[in-house]
Amino acid sequence: MHMKGAVFNGPGTPLQIAELSVSGPQPGEVMVRMTASGVCHSDYHVVLGEWAAQTPLVLGHEGAGIVVEVGDGVTDVNVGDSVALSWTPSCRRCLYCVSGRPQLCTSAVQNAYRNVLPDGTTRLSRGGDPVYSYLSVGSFAEYAVVPESGAIKIADDVSPAIAALVGCAVTTGVGAAMNTVPVAPGSTVAVIGAGGVGLSAIMGARLQSPATIIAVDLSEEKLELARRAGATHTINARETDVVGAIKEISGGDGVEYAFEAIGRAGTIEQAYAALAPGGTAVVVGQVPSGVKISIDPMAMSGRELTLTGSNYGSSRPSVDFNRILGLHSSGALDLELLVGDRIPLADINEAFTAMGSGATGRTVIEFP
Image 1 (cartoon, rainbow, N blue to C red):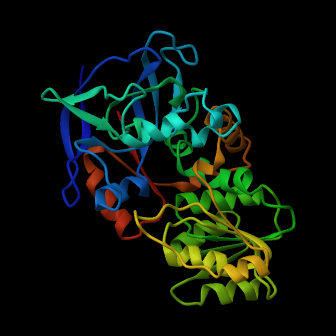
Image 2 (image 1 turned 90 degrees about the vertical axis):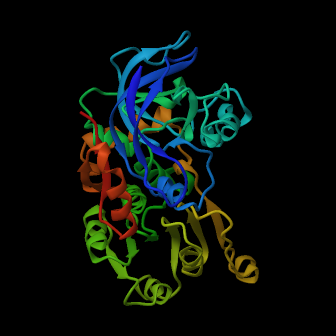
Image 3 (image 1 turned 60 degrees about the vertical axis):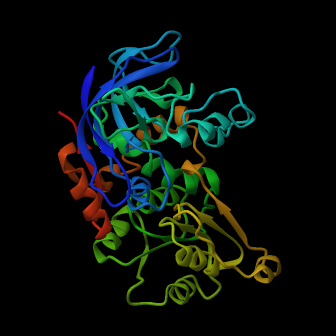
């Protein structure tokens, strides 16, 4: 079958809208007709050359769609089901999967992180040559073939844009504050970065009833969204010393929890420096390859500080996607707040240009 997809051919070149061939699903796989895809900063890392990836490659990993075909042995979904896609398709057998940490699945690291399916191959091609699917998803295309565990059945009435964002940004941010390091009621929280992941972390923290949520960003438009998401205080990092302002707002010592949702060495160090004794900083954002940070180990031991990471919000997609969507439908999470521009696939390069200039809201590709 033929379809259109946005193909990445190498850093420094625009994505190319190309005609691709897609073959049917093999055993344990699912073919999905895409209805929406978010444009995530992880895709942008590849476009900029900050993360290496084999080419040609269909980017996109934050997607939703309708199942149109299933391979042999598939039991989780049927043709016609609405699904949100997970970029850590779990094998369900390794140590991490069976111990309840599928976001660390060994198979996902070996296959999805190499942009191939579990058998080490791809279902996409162009002129007979293989085309890879980013994180075993490749949602910047009209169709995607994904592992069964990467297609999570959801209710048919969920907005495709919302379902797509739950596939990455929302689950990453909400999960960081609810799963990785659950925020305690009455506590103090800082979230550095008010993009899609940061706003989701604010919403996830708010559900835990902290006393204070401090949002930090360079953009007043994003800080306004942060207030709407539940931030009690905001700091414009262009105008204010971030660590000093956080400590002043939190009473002098710092915050008990700090979530870094950008992926920069300087902001990770700020999150750590803003902690009160006994506090925990969580690295949610992902940095370019090779970036290092500098922290004071004497402060870590002397003040009993914790610095930890969160991958995909420590989520179990098969459980957490629908849990989050339930919170949205009940009004506890306003996920519509995250949706910015809605564009056709043909405008994907403009979406990356807007991302580079600090656009507010998550751009979502909508498919006819």
